[in-house]
Image (cartoon, rainbow, N blue to C red):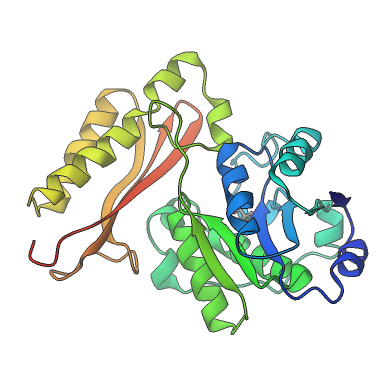
Length: 281
Ligand code: PAF
C-alpha cells in the first residue's frame, strides 16, 4: 500500500487509472470505515482512501483541534482491508492558499437538521469532497449512511456538477449494544458510553411506532427528546423525514428515515434509521 502526502505524488500514482474506487475519511478509523473500504473493493480498483481532517467543515468551538490524528494505526487498518493507496495531505497541501472559492450546497438541503446546528459545515464538506474528487478522479466513491444528510449533499453535488462518479452508500456498522460506530465515540467516558445507545433506542422506538401506524411525527419526536433530556442529554434534533429528500414526509412518502443528533456531555452523537412503509400503510 502506498501512503502519499502530496498532490503531485497522488497524480503520478493514479495517472491513466480509470476504475478507481475512493473512500474519503478524516482518519481515526474504526470497523465502519474498514467496511467502506471492503465495499469499495467490490466496485473498483485501485482503492484509494483519503485521510484529512478538513478545517473548512468545523465551526468555531467544534472539535477540529482535538479530533484524533492516528495515521499509523489508520494505515495498518487500511492495509489489512486491502486498500491500495492512502492519500494523507497536510492542510497546507490541500489548501495552499485560503480557499476563497467554495461550494455552497442549496439551502433546501442544508438549512435544517445538522445544517441548522453546524452552520457552514456542509459548505466545507462539499468543497473538500469536490477537491478530492478532482484529485482522485474516481469512478466510484463510497460514503457511510450514518452521515445521512452528507450523503444527500454529495449525491446532489455529483448530479449538479455532472461529475462522472457513482456514489455508493455503505451501511452503518454498530457496536454489540447497537451504538453506531463513530470516530467520536472515543470521546465518551465509561458511564457516557453505557448511556450512548439511548439515542438509537429512541430512534428505533419512533420507527416501530410509525411502522405500526402512528402518524403524529411531532409528538413522537417530542417524546423522544423528553426521554433523552430526562436522561441528561442535550438534544439538537430528532426528526422523521422522507429518506429521498430529507423533507417532512408527504402523505404518500414510503421511504422514511428517523434522524437524531444529541449531546452527551461534550460529545455530539448522530444516528439515523431508514425504513420503508408498505404501499398501503
Ligand atoms: O464523513 C467524513 O469523514 C467527512 O465529512 C469527509 C466526507 C471525509 C469530508 O471531510
